Length: 115
Image 1: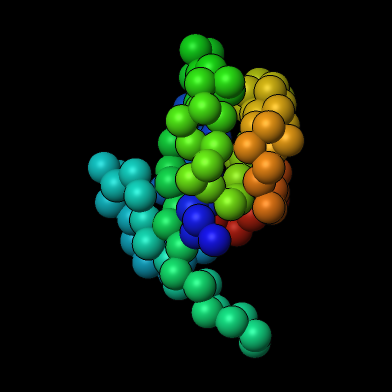
Image 2: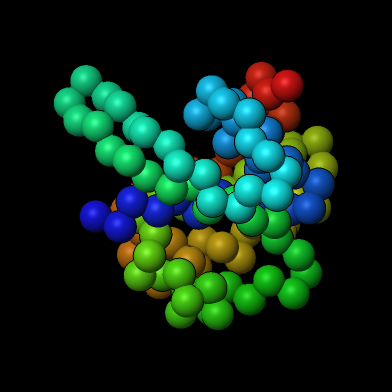
């Protein structure tokens, strides 16, 4: 298991806020890799959340080539009240199939209780 989860969102999305909500710990704005212990009834896994922001020049193919073998999961964040943030994540469905990601989630930040 690679134990890496890539967390992406358009520039209007605060990936650090999502990571803070998920881990229960504040995340410094300059942190791009956040350790997280995922604990369920059946197992404990130490994973890394890789936080990044999408821009118009984000090249999915280049990321697949550089990170495809390093991540198990992908979280795409958007704001349902800002359609352009969803348009920014749509091309990343290619990453899921090309990188053989084990788990992928697309979440609307507007529906999450993040402070």
